[in-house]
Image (cartoon, rainbow, N blue to C red):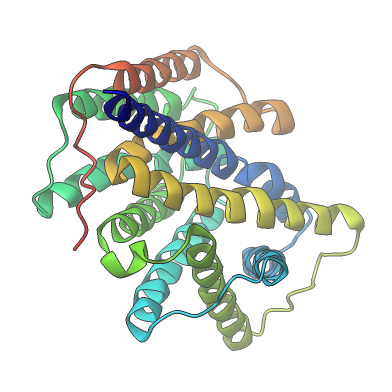
Length: 312
């Protein structure tokens, strides 16, 4: 009896840890505009921002792993999966940052939150179906995001920015699904997964800068620039990627993606407090709807096996 109780308590604690990791993922990823927009306003190119974001993240994370004497060893099959993850994560970052050039940062990050719907659709294609509780949460958060992304008439939403945001969402959704469904990836620690995914990004952005003849240090003249790059490397990159992997493994791809609603909420608040972007009635309604959906998904009774935790 005691053993059964301890087992249930352990599962409950683990599930709560997964929810907490998902929330941390959303909040930290939503901080992208806080560090990226000031750099772009200084004239630093997206290529430079992304290169140094990933390079600093790899150096910091690699140094931490070396200090803890963690192994960097992975198999050939795992390397292939990690390359795919790195490509998807890098494409998501590049598309999002490019979208900032065409539409407000809060709106761009909000549109990226389409990815829970995309995750659910991809998982259905793989014959893994969310429970009705998760579907209610997805629909409610999607409606909330529609309210969040509505223009107040003073903003011009260029189609290119919207398209780039959607590409970012799709790449991010596929990143989550691969983590959830790959057996070889499940054998890798969250730290090692994050390290190799980001290392792939460093290689990609290095090659891109070489081909495009991009002067990577152009515009990086003061301490604040490097501080913003360091902020990007740590919070929306290392912390966000590691906690995303943790949440996806514990509570599954679909539910972990729904918790990403904290991304647009954080981005909207950052846009308002840091850059003077307006908070309208639509934004308030959207935040209330999305928060209610999250509370419902976590608190709703019944078996929540919708995440698709089985690996292939």
